[in-house]
Each structure stands twice: as C-alpha cells, then as structure tokens.
Image 1: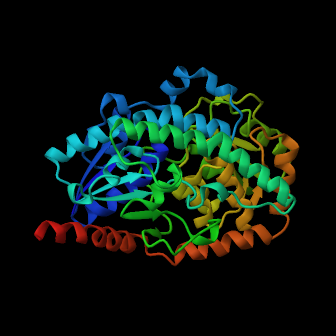
Image 2: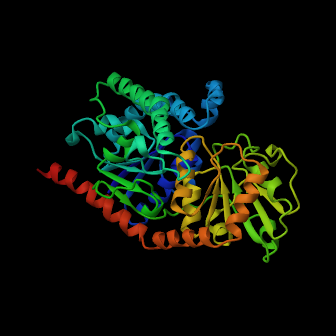
Image 3: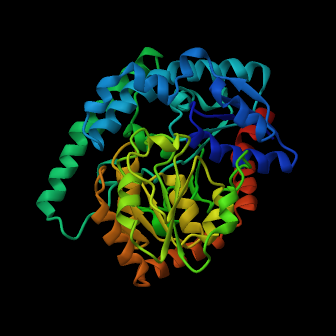
Length: 429
C-alpha cells in the first residue's frame, strides 16, 4: 500500500498517526507524511518521509493564539471550541485539500489517512469516489456520532437542565460551525454536508479508526459499518528520557501524574498549580508534573517537597508505575492511562476536554471536576476519594482489560487493506 498521512500542525494530532505509520512501514508499506513544517523533526525522528503542508494550511497554536487574542475572552467549553473550529480549523480546509491534491500527483496513494480534525479531506469525500483514493480518518478524541447528544447525562441534572444544555450546544457550537463549514465548502463548489460537521468526520470516510474501547465511549454505536475501535495505539519513540530523579523516587509512596498537555498549558495555574498546593501535605504521595514544554518557572506556586517537575515524561515507561492521573482531559493521555488501568481526575473545558472529562466520569474510571479552574481542595478531595477506595481503580482495570483484547497492529493492517480493496477493484474494471 501507498499511504498519504495528513495532520494539522500539532503534536497531539500528529503523534497517533506516527504510531500507525511505524506499523505500516514495519510491514513493508510506503508512507508519506504531510503536515506543518515545524513538525518535520518529529516526523523524521519517527523515520518517516516528510512533505510540508501548503503555507495557508500551516498555522500552529502559537500563531493562532497571537492572531486571535479575543479567543481568551470566550467562555471555556462550547463557545471557545466553536470559535476554534471557525477560526483555526475551517480556514485551513481549502489549502489542506489543495495540498493533498498536489501531493497525490507525485505520490499516487492508495489511501489517505488523516486525523479527525483535518477537514481537508471533506471536499474529496463529497466528490465522486472514483476520482480519489480511499479515505480513512483516525479519531483523536471521543467519537462524535450524535453531535447534539454527545455529552453523557449527569444524574444530578434534571431533564429540563439537560435539554437547556443541548439547546445551548446547538446555539454556541453546532449551528455556527455548520454554517461556517457549508460556506467554506460552497466556496470550493462542494456538495452541502448532510450531517453535522463534527459527525461527518466519523461517518463520511470509507473507514474510521477509533483509538480506544467502546466501554469509555458514551453514545457508542457499532451499527455504523465504517467505525472500528482499535484499542491503544503505540506511541512513537521520542527524544525524551527519564529524568535522573526518577530512579531515586521513594517506592513506598503512591505516584500522582499531573499534566495540562501541550496545548491548554499556557496557564499552569488552572490545574498544575492547584494540584501541587492541594497535595503538598499528603505524605504518602509523590507528585510528578509535566509542563508540556513550558518552563518550570511558569508554574505560579512554590514546588512542594513531595513534587518533581519536568518538561516531558515518556508515558510508556512512566504510566505503569502511576497510581492516579490528574489531567485537563487530553484524550491521548487519558487513553494511555486507561490502557494501563490508571484512574483519573479530570478538570478541563477547552477544546474537546469537556466531553473527554465527562466520559471519564460516565465510564466509572474517574472523577470529572467540571471546571477549567480547579482549586487545591477540589483536587485533593477527588484524589483522596479515588486513592482511598477501590471502585475507580477497579473500573479502570476493567477498561485496561478491554484494551488488552485488541491486537491493534493486526486490526489496523486488516482494516486498511480491506478499505482500499474496492478502490483497487474499481481501477481494474
């Protein structure tokens, strides 16, 4: 197979694709990765050939935040997420599509594999299928199949309150992004979308690969033939090694891992700071903090004696030792934790994190603090609830057993090869 892999200019979106790329190359398939120029070192470190996106499709998070300072005034959650789709993701769509078409002229791929927020595949999907390769999307967050009802209901919320939330979701997120998407696609003379934009990324492609397990996914629907759960993707090797202090940690203490990821980490006072303060006096714990590339000086509180701070940690090596993950809801990090049976405290509302955090609680594997600004007491109380009982740990272990049922490598290869067979047969007709 010849596979063209496409991603926006973001490590969190690209990393899962590189995990798949390594599997494909291992089995003799030819891979080319198209993404932002700043991602070139990451692509080449994974051993893959790189081709840059067109300049108009090469915006990264720092440039975006600088261009739209008003984003910070949006309410975290649906309003901010809708703003991001309208101003970051959709404007890159035309150049993404043009970049794919240009690359296909020299690299006639059998299949395009794109992450699920790379909207540049939509014009190809809405055109004549005979004029394109097969197209597969890889999910990088919770599966979106029912856009209006994608967040799990909460027992403490009445039916009326839940309906009001859904109406708010329609007003702040679904309707504005749908209008923006239809306008963008119309400019390319594409057909109108027949379903919500976010839902289209999982229902329109020939194949949708979802890293994760169905037990974590609210509103899962196995009746859609293109959607396949594939368990946990292997993380590509990175340049990060364990810090020197790792081998000196007190093995009698339980280990907390605290992270705000690599995107929503500009203000480490939202979760990292409160976690350090809330857990500072817990003598039976060691708190590990990863800043996601931010300097340690960005943490706005004093570092307590029971904490260790570093830019990055290799999760494959660290997570088997962790007793609790405290996160703002990054889907990839949550998946790694659950695959290792690690329960979770989640506190995040930006990007997709509100839905990820809600699924953490709905699945029974952790506690959703339902805030974008945690307090020390909130973190400490939730952490002690999970550590001092077994119910969340037991559920996380059950989900880890679900992950273990998947032979991800074999499933990936079978699904991708089956996906291109119809296109190959058409070409032979």
